Image (cartoon, rainbow over all chains, first blue to last red; front, top):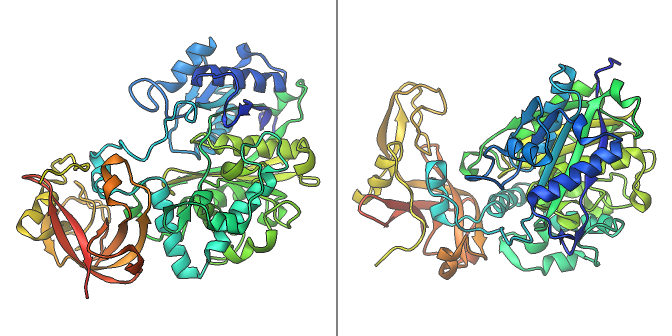
Length: 389
Length: 135
């Protein structure tokens, strides 16, 4: 392997209490603490960071404006590579690809990917107040509560075409909860049954509250460097073997086939091909679970099961602890935490699984992981293949 | 009656579309290069990427591709409407539109139902196309 192979050498997330930052941190404080913790995990210093990748929905003059500059300034660093891609919750899988390319080409040597959101503390989450100009003028006047509305439309069509039942969607939520019960840091850890999901409040038919991801705070950081540099570091390096990204559309009316997650198809094929592995080699998957339907569509798009068969695939605890196909081992966005853009926490959990740090939720001898993020309204996708050398 | 829900910010792409309903007709951009209609209105054809576009009237008839019943409102302005139906309508002419199904109880809506356009005038320049199930 070439010396400049990108490897993950540090990960960290900030502890929450009742879904909120334990210390009442704002988004900059939270990102600084997560970054320092990830650097400490790697055995690196802030002054080693020469690449900065960040994204979010906070900031000056609206989401995304000058975000890496703001974070870099706060951290007291002047990176020579920066990225502020803003494509929804999948962005961090995309940025792990971007960081890897930058490292391979020598644009930077130590890349920090960092994210923070205080949405639960700030009570910032609302269905209202969206703009009615540009493409949103054709959508917002009709009162579709996004993102849940788009996923509800997809779920309704999926059930119509495949015969999937509400119980099958509920299985995804129950599996996530069983994983969360093995994760001390997870927000929702009380027992959850299929009946509980089916009796949870209706939001957008056929989706109920328990089909939807949590609303929490959260901050996380990932450190990427070259395999050469990693030789002198204390942590076990995790190889970034493959990556891919793709987009479809923002408005649900633009999506030709609501049962086909095209971005995930495209990005996962690219990532798997680049890694030179086969899907059956993967030991553990972290698949963005913004809503229960997202998991079903992603399983089919990646090719784990055939179109229309995901509902059957997840039955009887297959994706739950002890099942044959472990996914979202930290409890996912449905039960662990979900600060708006969950993708970075998928990477963090995958790294911890590959290092064997997951205690009672550890997947035996996990050597190869697939991480897939879905962003926006089924809009964007990015996949990474990670491996333990 | 004053209209209190969010209304479109009209631009030169959308002006003929939002205005078409004022005369009871649904008009969409049509590409004379590839012969296809598109929605939402753009300055280039999203199918062939050429710009030979003009607005033409369509039937306003279609079928429900999918729907959801909003049990929670999309903001306070929709609070009095819940439960209401948001649906994707496949028009006979091809394009798919997001809109509301009106005049129907939420438990009666189904995928595949035939629908026809109606209009709700919200200002001097904007009439929102909505759909009603054909009996």
